[in-house]
Length: 438
Image (cartoon, rainbow, N blue to C red; front, top):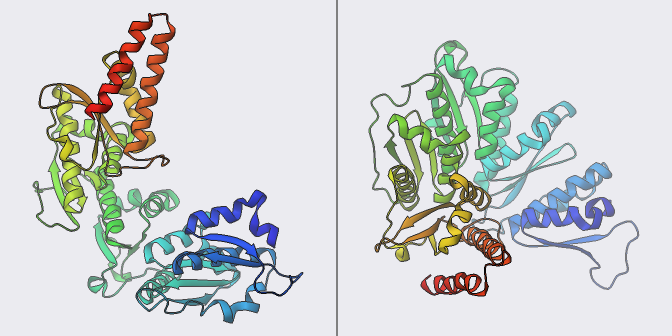
């Protein structure tokens, strides 16, 4: 199984290292010679990283050499017990029958992944064994979520006492919207689960069929809120007013996680949404907040800093329809990069109707536009909560590299047309100045 675990040119091992942030290699341990039947694989990293990588390797080995895990079960399961910050780290197990395994795994491992993300535990299947590794709370949640999944095969499931739990949100969905929210073969609900890393199912007591049903969302607070707002948006599309009737604008003073609301006018909504929701997703990603439109109401969830940032981005977006936007005190912000683009490059950098800016935004996960400063001078500003790095494909530094590439391309083109030495040098001087000003 060594070659199988390593993969072609070491690719499988490298992918595990990347996924779990570990360092892995085959090695000799001690002075003893090599055993022809086994190779020792060393895994370095945090308790969680090592465990995730180890179980993934064991799962792969078990497919190649069935029954292998049983030989080392008693050595693997108690490993690193209590060795995390909480002192409760451990591993629980369950055993599946053949038909149960495929259900617990889901299409392309989707069910396993959502259980892992929603519970916070490492969930891995080694042969017919399910292993849950994490803190005591994480393991308990993973086992409960798995139990609820299998109970659904027998009939409706109702989670008693969900109001007292800190890992559940329940939302009422009108009976005529249930099919729309669920989608064909559960595609819509499954998509939300995958996007937000939550577990969701409709729960009702057998005697309550026919009225609005309660949809339970299990997972971390932020993920639950994101999924809840997406469901609210879908319901509002099908049944306008369900969640927005009488709703007013709201700005919370809570510094931690909370939700603010903004109300759009008719013509503002489509502009703030963009084609297939592209503008909303762009602002959401750049701000680092959850931004969802439920009817004409924008729900903005996150920390106070994230919420303020998202509201500013939406406000600037809407202001651009009326003309140039003036933004003061850019130097005092921690979410912006200011670039002075040479005059003869501005049209090239922005593209036809802003097409090049949209391309660079999508590629780098940022929000970019031309804005005036206090003196009325125009410059390009890149907004994003993530500063990025020299090599990362996302963030402000990535966007800055893309803009600089566009500028260099334009200057090369202009210089190559025989515009004369003086003309081609002039923009370079402008570029040096822009770096000084930045």
